[in-house]
Every structure is written in C-alpha cells, then in structure tokens.
Image: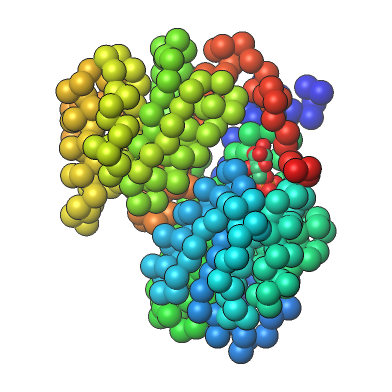
Length: 373
Ligand code: G6P
C-alpha cells in the first residue's frame, strides 16, 4: 500500500533512500568499551579464527557482487586469500576446503536454496561457515557457525539495493574483525578505517540529495538506448557488474558489466555511435595509477562515438572533459567507494524502468528469493 511505501513512489525508491541508514545500522554497536569489534553470533573459538588461512565467499546475484568487494578489502587488510564463488557452481564441484577455511555465505533473505546447499556442502567438509544475512533466524544464519546480521530492515522490492550496501558494510566489519584477531593491522589503523566507514552514510546521503536530478534526467535521455556497457576496475569492477544487473533486472535493457581492463579483449567491439557506456572512475588522489588507465579507456570508447556516463569523484577534470554525463561522488577511501558509487546506479535503473513504464518493485520473471532449483 501507499502507506507502507512511506510516501515514496515505490518500495525500491524508499529502499534506495534507506541506503544511508542501512549502512549506519549495520555498523551500530560493533565497537565495545575496549574498542574491540563485535559480531552478532560467533560459535567459533578465537584459536580457530586465528588459524583461518583462506576465505571462500558463496552467494548468488547481488550478494555475490558484495562478495567481490569483500575480496578486495579483506585481502588488503587481512592478507589471506579470498575466493568468491557463485553458490550453484560451488555446490556441484569439489572445492578445496579444510577446517582452516572460513566460508562466508552472503544472503539477504537467508533462504536462497543454492546458497543454503553450498553452506551444507562446506560444513560436511569440516569448514566453518559465517553468514552475512539480513533476515533474523532464517535458514542460512541458523545453520552457520557465526552470524553477522545486516540491519538494513526488511527489503520488499525484488531488486536488492539497501541490502547490498549493508552486505558490503558487514564484509568490511568482518575484514576488520579478522585483522584485529589475527593482528594483521594496528589498532589505530582499524579505528581509522572504522571512522571512515562511519562517515559513509553521510556521503551516500550527499549523493541522494545532490545527484538524483542528474540521474533522473540521464535516464529520461537514455530511455531508448538498446544496450549498455558498464566498466570498472578494482572495487569499481563489482560496482559495474551490479549496475549492469540492476538495469537488466528492472528496465529489461540488455546490459553487460566488465572489468575495464578487458575493454581491448572484447567489449570494445560492441561500442557503437551514440550507444551508452558507463564508467566507474577511481579517484585520482594519491596518484592512483588506475585513474589514468580508466580515463584512457574512456578516451578510446569516446573516439568510437559512444556516449559516456561516468561515476567519478568531485572535481575530476579528466572526467569533466570526456564524459557526457557525470554522477559525482564525494571524496572517500578507495576501498569504501562501492558504498557510494552504486547509489546513482541504483537510482538510474529505477528511473529507466519508470521511464519505460514498468513496475520497478515487481520485475517480470524474477523472484525476491529463489528458494527452489
Ligand atoms: C534473487 C533476487 C536478488 C538477490 C538474489 C540472492 O535473484 O532477485 O536480488 O540478489 O536472489 O538473494 P539472497 O536473498 O540470497 O541475497
């Protein structure tokens, strides 16, 4: 009903506007008086956590893209290998698991059949499972050895939005927790990172407050585009994948997400006069070498007549020069940037679907939670 939507046009609109609070609530109460990080339920003793030598993330759909972000952050902070695998692939092969492997199951609903079965597959082989889940007491957290709840609140729209930013936030918390237990980072560094994390809701809010009109106008302008390419590098890569997924899910536009470094290995052949290409541009600050690489990708695509949409940091002069449309992000730590970069792409998919006259909350053929095979 209209009342349930709290005055918003759709649940999706409401839930995108809950991105800042989803992040904030997932961070709430994670630091105790000793400054130690807390998870919700941990039935693994500290000795076993210290012994973890590999992480395997299992998930489907949007949750798997949150897992890809987790890989970049956790490997950087904790210095242990992190693999990310789709649950339906993982469960039907012979993954190498030991009691020292921590399997992280990410699921909004906690009921996705493939993720649940993959979790059982891992436990049968003696691995510990930690669930990142948005639904209290669902099957996946019930069957796990540890749980980190995302406190995004109930998500109604089929396309996941606030749960995604909450999952990424929870993955950061897990990374910092492991760094703390394993002594992989100094206490000060962990605190600094937590502080940066705590500033993210406000940065997301800035996007909602200042970029929405630009995004809405862009969607109206692009409504007849036949297909979209989404390109990003490093943590911008999963963001590109998620942006592409959102648009195909609800606007039924043919989209592909790629790692921007793959451009010359295929996607550039698809680039056509006037067709849109979306780039997630890393910050230039700190002489980030990836910035120049993404800009040169933009130049190449531009030279072939594509129209460029960029998600970029405020004040990026190169982006200003080449992009046709820019969704600006405020300055933030590169590893945390997916939390802000995905927001305009969520809005973009929603406005595209709306402009095409579709029901954004209930896309055709899709279910909120896939509990069958
Ligand atoms: C379905 C939903 C997606 C979701 C995926 C995984 O495909 O439409 O939005 O990302 O399932 O769901 P889960 O509840 O496990 O996160």
